[in-house]
Image (cartoon, rainbow, N blue to C red):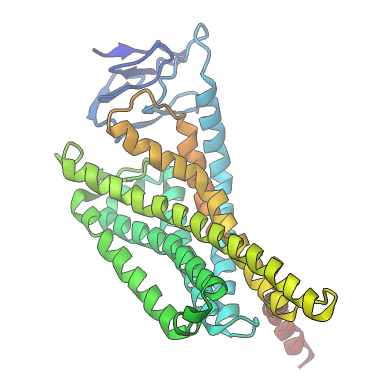
Length: 400
C-alpha cells in the first residue's frame, strides 16, 4: 500500500510503499508526483527518481528516508546532511578533478624518469598505481559523478553506459589491487629475504601488474550484459538503467556480492594482515639486531641497514594507511548492501554514508602524490624541478 507524504507549500509530494515509524523505506517501488499532478511510477527500489522542487531544493526518492515537507513534520537530520553533501559535491568534485588529473600525471612523469632513488620494482608499482588513479579520476569522477551532481541531461543521449560501467569498475579494481600487490611486494622485501631476490624484480612486477589488469577487465565484463547503454544519472553503485529481469535474478545477487567481496572487501583484509605481519617482523628483527650489535660492540651505534629500510617502510605504511582510512566508509557500505539484499532489513545505514563513501574513495585517488612528496626527499626535488621547468623556459625565452 502506498503511503503518501504530505504536500509542501509548492505541492510537491513523495510516496513510498512500506515505511516504518521513522519514515525509512523498507522495500518496493517508488512514485513521485510533481506540481502538475503527473505520476512517474514503476521504478525499482534501486533505480530512484530525481526531481527538482519548485523551491530549488533537490528532491530524490531515497531508499532510506521519506521526506515530510510541511511544518508539522520537521525534516530528518539524515536528509539535511544529504542536502549539505550534495551542495558540497558541486564544489568538491570539480575541484578534486582539477587537482587529481595534473597531480597523477606529474607523478607518472616524475617516477618514470627513475631519479627518485627507488628501485625499478617499486617504481613500476607506483607508476601503475598513479595511472590507475588517473583513470578512476577521469572515468568515475569526471564522467560519472560530475554529470550526476550537475544533472547533465545530454549524457542520457550518449549510448555507452554499459561500456562506461565496465571501464569504471575495471579501473577501480586495478587501483585497489595495485595497492595490494605493492603491499605484498614490500612484505616480501622486508620479511622474506630468501624470496626477495626472485620476486622483487622489475620483470615480476610487470607480470603481476599485467595479470591484475587483465583479470580486472575480465571480471567486470558481465556488467556489460546486465546494464543497458542508457545512463540513469543517479548516484548509485550502478548508474546505468538495468536490463529487465536482472534485478530479480539470483545471478545479479551473486555478481553484486562478488563485486563488493573482491573490491574492496578482500583487499581491505589483505592489506591489514600484510601490514600486521610486517610490523611484527620489524619489531622482532629490530630487537634481535639491537641486542646482537650491543653485545658485539658494547654499545648501540646507528644501524645503516635498518635506516635504509626506514623510508621504504614509511612509504608502505603511509600508502596502506591512506587506503584504509579513505576506503573504510565505502567498505562499511559495501558490507551493508549485500546484507540488506539477503534480508537483514533491521540493519540500517543513513543514505549519507554512501555519499560520504564515494567522496572519500575518490579522494584516495588524488593523495598519493602528497604522500610521495612528504616521505621521499628525492621525489620532492624532482617535483620542484618539474614545476619550475615551464617558468624556466619562459625566462629563457624572454632573455633570448
